[in-house]
Image 1: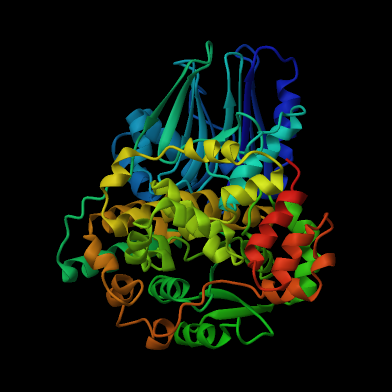
Image 2: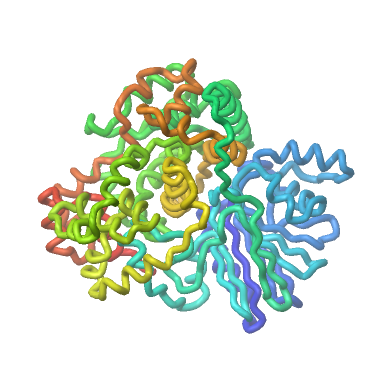
Length: 589
């Protein structure tokens, strides 16, 4: 796990200095080594900071080269099946000089070209400079787990693992619409950042950039495909069980201390129980609260005791939270209404002496764990109401009813925002002092693949929870918060093979049962304690509401919106929406 940065710029005489600046502002994501590569003739520079997880020796440092130094690699992530690929490549005549997965990437590219990306089972964002063909390739993993941002025009290419790196280059122009997106979604969708024309590389894709002309072309090595070909529940359960077990086994490979985040919910409990089959000396860690309404200590202990793990728990209270707020904002690469939970679990993992932690992220999106999956029928009925009724919902005093107004546009983004949206267009316009038409125009420009309209209702919800909420918020938050503490977070539920397996299963099997995540639970009913799943879903939430209401005026050092503060105190505005407003006022683009 690392941080990468790079520049091609023939108009600049300081690309090395600039690349080092970009690289080192991300130093907390790679404290173990700093590397640089310069090709003065091509006016190209690549930077790398390393967090050593696999192959802790110096031979694993980057940038890494092939034998003839015609290929140069900077890579962020882990290739979990690298040993299998290494064996295959060795049998094909390739020789290896390190124990790292980075060298496997170089050899795989030599053997298969860009087809190698589809063979990788892991998470990655990389830049590969192919000197022989005068091209640089930027690639990102199948699920968008690892970030890669870039800017390209006719004269220059910049790329980095974090948006903050671009701010080291110059006074970058702010994207004029970022606050509209943020106040609406609670995060920035992947096609936009706070900086103008700096965007994220699409998941499952790669760019080939001509080093001489900067002409570029994007290609996809994988895309979502919901075949729904498996209609037998027994077959589905067997497939899920086998695929998850293989995924967990892969994700346990490490040469540095590794543990599991145990929240007490279904997903983290299941990962812990499966991991016990492959790793005897398990480390688990949990967050607990004084407030019993939020603490899941009882359920954490059930699983920790069953696997006999080395369990550590960390108390989080209001004082610890408030004291950490300045650092939380320093860690926040892009504005987010979430991410604080990831900040603290990473902080505590660091204190526990770990370097990598497995997380249950992704299971809710794939197996139907969110309330949005249960609202499908309700959504259909309410969408049939006349537009004037839907539009009038934004006059409601309670924000949860105001969201009904998102449905008046009769499009799939409106459906998503009904479930996940924060402030309605009229509220956003009011906060930003602009015309509501400007807000709606920006939201209408969000493009979605045409095939989404043909999906079954359950798969449609799954697609949006995965490709908007998870990819644009949860994964981004997890990455920059964890790397701020030099911790790698691994997500076995987003294993390439597991996602493909889930998308083959008919939606009625995945989402047609009253019990949320029925398929996941039934696939492991022999090992998953009934106490863990036979209770109300709690989710990984903090007592923010209580903490904020106790002293909301002093909670954040920004100008308070008197109207919003009053609504929040009166219980007419959720803490998450008020927090989103505060972040929009505090975040420096």
